[in-house]
Length: 166
Picture 1 (cartoon, rainbow, N blue to C red):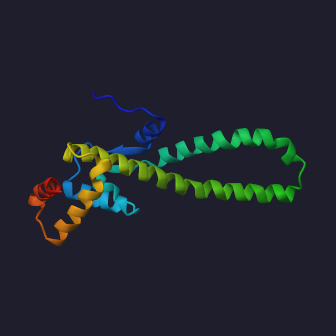
Picture 2 (picture 1 turned 180 degrees about the vertical axis):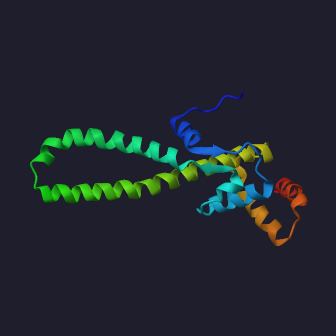
Picture 3 (picture 1 turned 120 degrees about the vertical axis):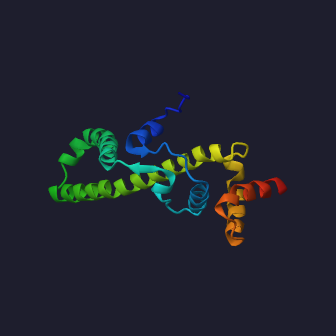
């Protein structure tokens, strides 16, 4: 089995997402790359991943607890002496921030797993062209291929021919 980067974020992603072992189709990869570069969310089905919502909640709760417990331990005495109305308002605001934060957490995880899946598939489809250097060039070539109505079976050759010309 190849060595995998076992950083904390990769462990979280592997725990929270189900990743398909099927290769990503070339057209799906190119569409996903284009959408990702435009700052849009990519269809997870095209990139072969699915969120395990229950596990995402568990990870998020652990992160929130790791932040809230130390802060509340340090702030207990000063907060105990303020007006209860202010404490109630503060608790409402913190609760709202926690619930809103979950959506940002899921969105960030989705962006990270999207880029990871694109790069993984990129290595299979374009092993001699680094993602960082060539993703913009290939995106432009792909847009031209769509305009020229290049068929699916000729798409890879069209892209590689145009890369060699540049």
